[in-house]
Length: 522
Image (cartoon, rainbow, N blue to C red; front, side, top):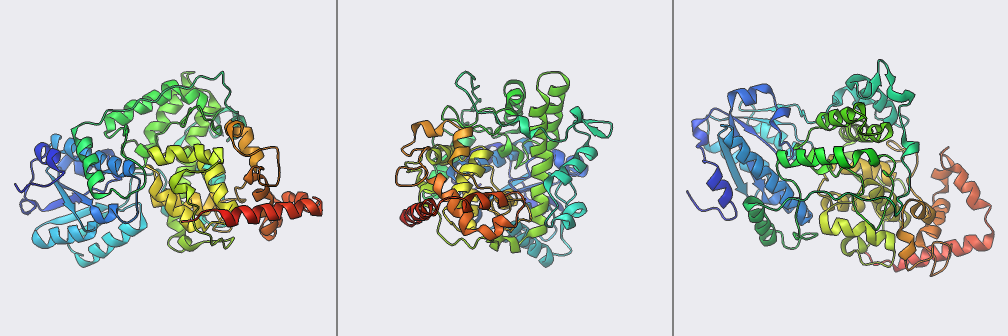
């Protein structure tokens, strides 16, 4: 066999089959790594499985190095497991995109028929759709089974006024999670009001298990260092799970050690830890190593057994069967036009600090550090600090969306785009979110301990020493008063601004202009 650099472990673990000896092949993408989500005939018939590493895909944007390690290593481990289960596995590496590699395989092996599952991301879907049209009699597509809800059943509902809460209640009834007959467990659908505690020094934070890279992961790390050296982040201290067995260990660890406290401190932020009581499981959920129903099943069982409080379990289940499923439906309904959404017409380039983390704003530094190091921060850091700052500094939402897509290990366009363009930046004008998610320094101070060690003063409202969030927030209210006034959830903020003395309004505007103009942009 011809030597394939950085594929030594794959070539040692998997006997490379001849595609010409097969009539049926299944192409498995890097975010479809669970045979339980594939039709039963796949496990029964054991057709040829095709895996493709695409250098063009990896270089389509400067994805975080740890994300690349995770994607490639988990795919290689999954392919090896499939081979051990008796599947013939054709593991291919190419400089081209998936469709070009598959096109060449089908042209060279004329007796081969290809089946693939609908990709979750638009660009890959478009490429494979073109391949299917070219090989119409030999290429077929099956629906994506890595989600719970049928997109076609809900897609037409995605309009202004149809909120996640409506969808969430319906999907709760369908799945039966935390339901007592036709009523929600405990009498309430949503316990978010109980999930806003600030973390105190008395609360001990549990450690999360990390996995030592094996030979496959080390080889992938060398590949990333060689071929993707200019990408975001670092390969140092990689410790993510890369197999389903490892991911299940982390799921059990979360259920046993962190789920009970997850709810109360779901919105908390602290210099003491990056994950706190969050699950950290989205990276495994979004490529199939874990499935949504198994997380929800274990969470509900923990509640039933008295090991986790109701508001914690409900908060987790809402994130998975509510928000995760809802944003995927939104993505399907709004693409591709929503990519250009920019309701506030913000045109500034993304601040340089998103790439470097170099800033005197302690909250921004603390929220960017784990992203730069590990491609992770929890959802409140993403929403109420990083996205909030982008909004308040009049940054182009498309650039923020691009950064989220490449910077996080759990990021795929179907989940990032709705969260950034629909929710956090309100770029779609209110289709997804009921109001713009902006906040001043008081919110960050309320939910974190960041402000204690900051160079800026949370108490000062304007001027060089004031927390920038303080004046940027009110400046945003003033500059976008038409949107804010027409929204029942935010019009009172315009009224509050209008009641401020003229001198304070002038200081707010001057401080904001000075800060925004002095930001280093990419």
